[in-house]
Image (cartoon, rainbow, N blue to C red):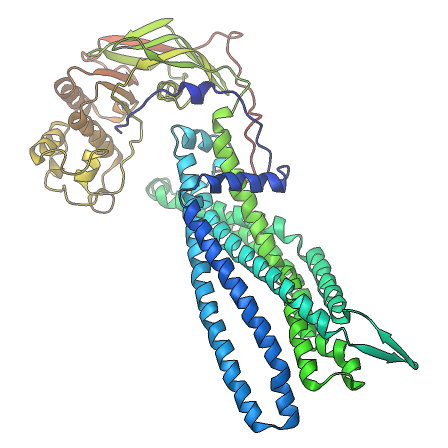
Length: 609
């Protein structure tokens, strides 16, 4: 894989920040502040603000229209009571005008609501992708424990769900607040004349219907929160287990050839069944919790059909209230009660939103804190080299199992050098490659890379973006940057002549290359881009003798002036590499201990592979 790399001393050696807390420990308002910072930095912030102003205006206009509609109830029902046909028909014309305006406002509100959801998702997803894709962060997050598992689920599904819930709940809450403010005064004035005749006494309760509405809705909210509160934890566990099942399915699909060759279908079947059983168990708990909550919310919903009539009935039957006045009071009560019971109607959505916010905020915090993982450990000093050279001084790389180091205290590599880095079979070599790339900063010593140099890192499993063979070979340049003759030349020189007529075919779906051919393709790409520095991680070790010699001949011809550092085994008869560096374990008692990370903890645990 060809990549441009610049050292990041500030990322590697920055001061530690406040440790990330677990989902259960992280306060709710800290999570909100985390998402607020994401919103402030969002490129769509201004658009969201203007859309919010627009929907606020529509909601205010709708509330005014609903007040007019509520006032319409009295004359309309009074015409029915008087059996006044002409007045009855005039009221229908008035209703058409009010209802038509409200219809337009409702459609406009729906359109703005959906647009806000899209823009919120765009802003949040762009923020998560931007933070996740900063140099070295994604790799470190993947090695940070359970929170680094399934980042695709967090960025895709959780961000979408959080944006939808945030828009829907916020708009609903604001609209309920406006309706409450609008109709409390109406309901208070309507019930100001309510007089109860009890035992020969006249009892006047100012704002009787308002107090009744608050008591009714408050009781419903308290009971609903008591019954529905467990949904926050259950929803969080549900999302985590669904993500784990999806990850297991993807893993099996990606390694299906190896699974089939090892006759491992039975084992994988048991793993998938176990993950499915975990999902079904939490789904059953979610089902029962929602069922218990439905008893409360639906029960109060049915009571609301008759509650305002029952509350106002004593005044009506005493003759102090007309039928039209009763219907107007019932309408105003329903509007106030609807506003007050917003919490009851949305308790499951609030629990879902809280669980999703917890996952997204914890994930974003983890991304931002990956640079501070193992903040108490020593770190390698990354710097820019003086002149056109790569230098390594007293390098020792800290690992959870110990340390590895170069036998040489000082190494200097210049363009044109051919260096082989090898080790005994029990010494892990991959961390050395990752340290040179800046992905693994823990240890001590100094790595100085050439300032502004064009460095290509070729991992053991090369990465190719989706696209045709020509796009893959040209990456990161645009297709057409290289002539067809150059493309044919590099392919033939690494033993991939069979692909010279396949430049317009999709590499993943059409060509079906094996692992060796993929690695050869990565080497061929080097011949097009001609980097001055090439660092290879065990890619050549997977080649047979003839392919190995062919690749060495290709690199000697195509990369004659480049420095080539190959991390791998010593091959018999090798004449290409003129210098050998030895990786070795540090002597017992002299290693740097990699401390247990304190700054990067995890949220709801998700089973790893």
